[in-house]
Image (cartoon, rainbow, N blue to C red; front, side, top):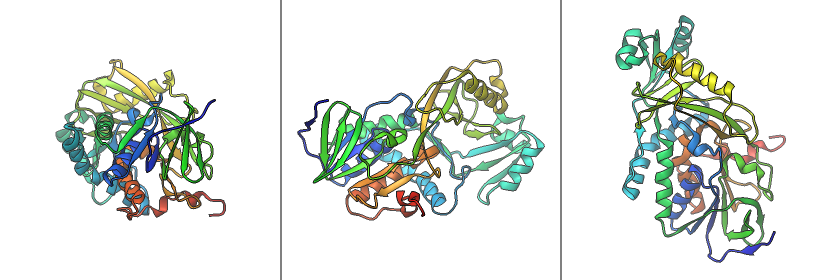
Length: 365
């Protein structure tokens, strides 16, 4: 394979063109850095396959992880407004809360026992008033601050932002190797070689496949299958005992999601589709007998402890990690961009990300 050098200079290379990579690139360019984003669409990339849940109150973490997830959710209103001002594109953001529905007495007891202080218990009557499609439910918990975002529209808006920034260049290539010499270098599958002063690894589920990094990246692909049904009988996302449903403004309802170690096979399976169809009917009986309108699968970048890997490498400070977001990549996109952009510019991150350092995976730590 022939290798040739790229011609135009950059201050920062961003490896990966999904939501996280685009957000990091945009944030760096806002700080007047010249950015080259290197990546190309991959089958199964999580950015377009997700449901867009913003649910830190339900998928609860402890300590700094909980604080970061909550701050990430609360960053969304100003972020989508910034995207609209820059691009004219509206990114649908649902802030009507998320319901966990109880469908039997055991579910009632479990949800009552686990309800956090800021959530609201709904009896069967209140549940049906709030969401008539859940009139079969025995009760539920409303998490009023959680919600969802249309991640496909978010991706389109972020791509439009970076395409409109003079300081950003997006290169369609797949980085296979990196090197750290006088400058950082990324070598693409095309044979091109890209150099800059700093690098951000934001390659999602493929992060661990890149050679030349200072250490192994504890991130693996975990497949999530999803369905979509025509019709949107809900105002807000709902979690049931075996999965969740998410209404979209385009009149569809998404159903998710499985969690399977299947390598990089981003295909649906009859078993996965059947499981999700049962979840859909469990929460929304009106979908019984209706075939799904669509089915797909994505690859989540799951880290060894399910938390993101953020910040500089301990031994190679020119390399910043923005990967391993696991189930929360969409949730954490804006705030991750804020943090990485600030660090690239020599500024403190707006929130503490010390607990997400890759150093936590060091042997004996």
